[in-house]
Length: 339
Image (tube, rainbow, N blue to C red; front, side, top):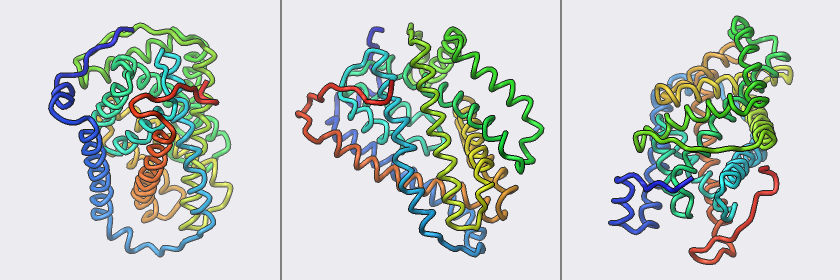
């Protein structure tokens, strides 16, 4: 894969401003924008939030806090593994830093800022723009397939999600598609190429990239992503249980809700920009399990929870990336579990 030049807008920024200043200003802007979205959501739903009889089980909240770095760290290491298989060789700590830095932009209504930020930061450490597009497309497709697999598996154990019952045959078909994609890399390649075109069009007007990754890596990454989705559902269950009594039998249903909202969020991100699709679907499904005010409040509180954790682990990842690394020359290495 040959390196494509940065878009003209990004080239202009690099030419006129110090890259470190640009990075800091961009990160601050994304953090403020994400915080503003949370604040607006809290303001619009203030009556529901204020009227709910809140309680706190600190044990559940602490358990969710401890699980978060594992659930977020798995995709970060897989991201580094994808880059490595596409020929990008650099310090995997930089991959983790970039992953958590751009995670803040994932909270914004459109994936444009996330993609632009990831492209710029990867370009700074020598990753071609085309490689970043392709790695992001592979990541998106495998996350989507893993979410479908987790959704279908958890529905087998979740008998209380009435809203999803009519869609179980369709979900079974989609699960078969997951298996087919892993078994047939050609089918998966078509899906990834479509996502690449969608992503690249947002910044450059489209691009075509040749690539090949073995079936073993694709299956391994999908399995790791499935673990991350499962842990995300467990975190959602723990956060709900921290503010509302919730029986353990609700765990499979909570995991299914988390995966279902993730599936819809991925579809929306590539079609309508992802504006509220994940939160709305999550609130609708949670209303069958918890009181309506909590179902409305849960996506907002979860967004706030993820925002605070993203800020925390962004700081940790940035410190880790700078620790013992020569200035301007990151060390080489490979993540131990990314494949």
